[in-house]
Length: 361
Image (cartoon, rainbow, N blue to C red; front, side, top):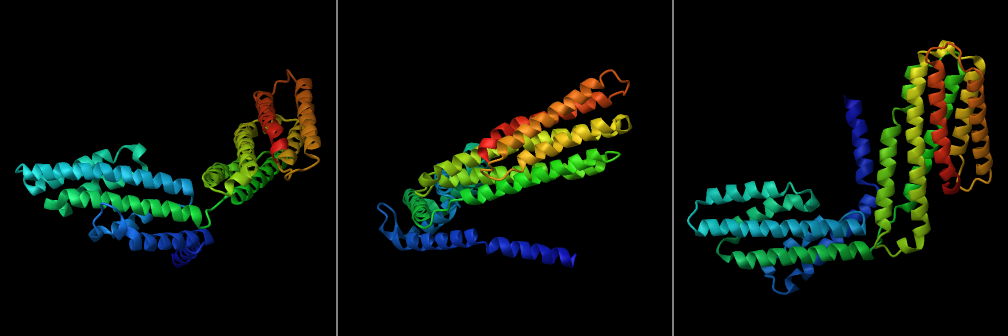
């Protein structure tokens, strides 16, 4: 128990002190200070409510410029809906409804409107803003709501501006490194599967263990590539790195295809394990060679001059496997031949994905 707490504490410390996180913290602090200092000068807003300007910075400050703009606009939209809701609550009170009824109505409707997914981060602000207007606005509701909205909007603008001007993040290189890690993971998985096939019997548990973390890793890398793409938009440095962004997108498509095909191949190999004693040594060797050859092309580094040769070798070994299966056609081996053909189809899918991989490494 103590070791787990200690391990989690180390992970949390690394996450909290990561360079990107510290940079975001510094920019947010600077933006909040600027917004606080300048808020009293916002036209048509009462300086009494200047404290909402730093809050606008806080809700809009995201790792990417586009993320900041999107979050800021969503927060302002949710805020506007909440203000309208709060004013409706004040109308109820002025009409003679008990305050507790108005509070309940504002919260209930605010929570319901918060279910609109298009509001994004603004979903949480509907009920909060409505309650603020109802409880704080009182007789000066119009003055409070206009100052509330204007100072928050000013804070959002400051947050977006600071994020754009002060070292706007660009995650293209980090995404490229994650793509390379995924490529290496798929290659080692295929080599592992090939070694398993080459043994006297296929161990289904080993096959499943070799591929069980691929979906999680694939999802993580997809998110990295998506965030890298977002970080390059509205980013002055992103225009100079357009080729890197396009390359990452093509690599992601190719690796997604190979990862899914690798999992399909593993599923077939698990089925084939039940018929393993029916495989001839030549068939086993041909299948293992085809998987190894597919691993070679997947593992080719960026700009590998031998990538096309490796692709040709992979295609040839697959042809050899199919030829071996055709020569053994008609043997009473139950489902062994069918599963082996299915495994060959899995390898073929990997090679098809690798056709794009040769030019996107």
